[in-house]
Length: 277
Image (tube, rainbow, N blue to C red; front, side, top):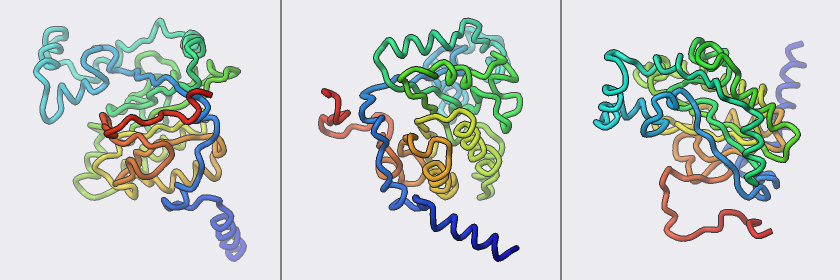
């Protein structure tokens, strides 16, 4: 029995088209639909929409290592003393949210893909994640599966559905402890399971990773995830990823290359080979 199991595991490893190495993963061509899509819409939406000031980075500008006085003053003027970021979640009700209207607007614009922030750096998941108890859109706030509703609304259209996902979280205790003790509890119990969740549950054709900085690709288990994504996931033939997977992967490895935010290539580049097609 053991011999048979070992044989099956070995065969599975050998038969996998893409191995968990950058040379193998980088050899995968981008699916044709992505180049032909020409352009898409990227939507940031979450708890940070309640204070609606500065950006989705509000918590960092408010409570980070170098608070921004404009943000601090805004919060002090508009909220009671002692307000925490978590307090905004109960007011994130999304009472006017209509997923079909989202889909109609995107389709009418001519965009051919749509990417939603499934989770930004504050860790609030826009779906009922099993690893984000009481800090997700089903347990608090809208009491709805925002990702699921949007995914459903794009069915039957020619718009490809994608998800942005932040690998790290500013104030997650496990992530902070990993930094102190050189452990990997956060990845093993939060980020890696969540990536599997969103792919298996919502089948996004774009997985837009972010928040990888300061940690290696080994810590994030990035190559392991991408090999699974390309070989056996439900979107293995159509999924597209970016290049933010830890270490020095940005601008070098993954699918399409984004480089860092505000990156200046020093020259005009052609955004799409088929832009005039």
